[in-house]
Image (cartoon, rainbow, N blue to C red; front, side, top):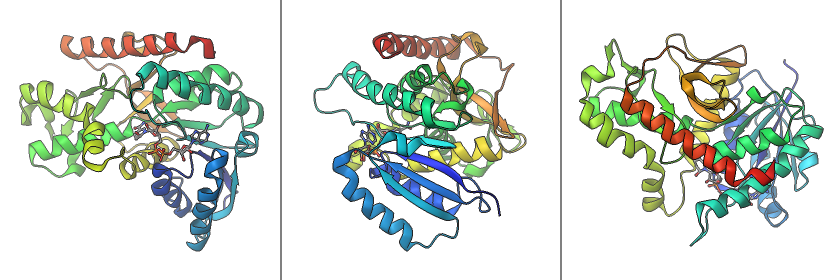
Length: 325
Ligand code: NAX
C-alpha cells in the first residue's frame, strides 16, 4: 500500500466540494491504490456544515480515506500538503463589478499563498478553481516563491469538457471519439475554444463541421455555458466543475492518453507569443506528474487575435491586483 498523501481542499462546505470530496476519497482522482488524508478549510461560520460533510465522508467507509481534518486555520489546512484544490472564494454579489470581485478574492489567494509558502510541501501541486481562477492562481504564485511556479495551475477542464460535448453533439458523434480539443486563454468569456486541431475519430473536426458554426456559435456557446447553467439552475455549475477538477488532477498526476491532450491554465513560458509568467490555458500533455505545452500548432489569424485579447484581459487583471504581490 502506498503512503497516504495530504489533499487540502478550500471552500470545502460549498457546492462544488459536495460533489468533489467523495470522489477524491473514493480514489477517482489519484488512483484506487492511493490512500488520502483530506485537510478541509472553511471560514469559521461554515464549520458546522463542514462537520456534516465530514460525517458523511466517514459514513461512506471509503477504504482509502485515512483521516479528515476540518479547520478554519489555513496553517493547519496546508501543513505538509501535497495537493491543493483551491475552491473557496466569494461569489459575485448583486451590483458587484468584476474588479471588486478580483480584489476581494485576490486577497484570499495572497493570504493563502503566503501560508502555503511557509507550511506546505514545496512540491505541492495546486489547481485554482475559485474565480477569477487564472488571476487568483497568478496572485498565489507571486506570494509563494518557494513553490515551483509550474505546480500552480488553474481549472480550464470544465471548459474543455463543455467544448467536447458541443462538438460531439453538432457532429452527431460519440463524445469518446473527440480528441485534441483546445481551450486557449482565460477562464472567462474571452477564452478561445478552438477545434482547428481537434479530431473526431479518424477525421479532422473542421472536415465534419462548418467554419461558420465553429467561429460564430461554438466559441460563444462554450464561453458562456456557465451563465446558461446559472440561468437554468439559479446557481453556478457545481457537479460538472467538480468533475473538471477530478479530470484535471487525474491527467496531471496519472498522465494523459497517448494521442490526446487536455487544456490546463499553466505558467506561460512564452509559447505562442503569450507573455511569460501569465497563467494561461494551453493544450498540454502530462507524464510522470509534469505537464508540457503542445508546441508547433499553426493558428489562424482569427484564433491568434482572440488569444491576444484573452492575454490582454489577464494582463489587465494582474494590473488591477498588483498591490497583492
Ligand atoms: P459556494 O459559495 O457554494 O462555496 C464556496 C465556499 O468557499 C463557501 O462554503 C465559503 O464559505 C468558502 N470560502 C469563502 N472564503 C473562503 C476562504 N477565505 N477560505 C476558505 N473557504 C472560503 O461556491 P461554489 O459553487 O462551490 O464555487 C466556488 C468557486 O468556484 C466560485 O468562485 C465559483 O465562481 C468558482 N467556479 C469556477 C469554475 C471554473 O471552471 N474555474 C466553474 C464553477 C464555478 O463557477
